[in-house]
Length: 233
Ligand SMILES: [Mn+2]
Image 1: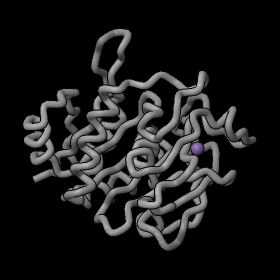
Image 2: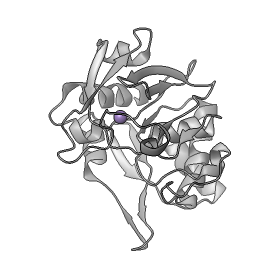
Image 3: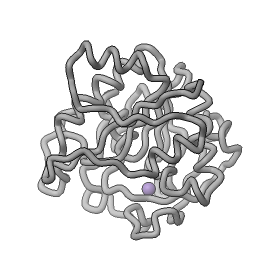
Image 4: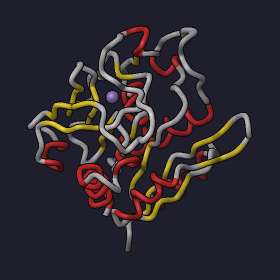
């Protein structure tokens, strides 16, 4: 039996439409999992039933996270948020955290885990913490644009066996204060937290970059998805 992975839905409020980037689905499939996009329904019984049928959860990219989740007021340069998805992901993440179900967070995912566990975010790194390093690249998105330094005492190092990694980058927000419940697995060359794990959980990790954009050309991106699906098996 292949592991079934719940994929957090993408939603376009203007079009009032669900959507999905095929790369998230394909990256899970190539690693041996079955991806299923989740509905936005917040009925507690429905969510429990869905949650129990899943072997793991993928927290995808998307809108900026509501600032009230990390105790701030939105500045004018903060992007639009989508509260319904924030609430949905909060419910799923807290269940997964309490029951130690495998989770992989990507981009918004790392920011979400940090906010939900008591950390804070830069609402816009360009304004609040300017840097020469490119974090919001132009296409092609499978091309690396900056370096991350990996903590050798981390799950990410165990997965990749690399102290340095070149990654793509497509984010305008980032972790400001790291949650005391998260462990820093990698930082960018200019000092942003780019990968975290939850200590004492089997596999709850998140990265700030986008392995789903690069898995077709990059073995390290595939290794991240492979390790996730293995943990879900
Ligand atoms: Mn970056």
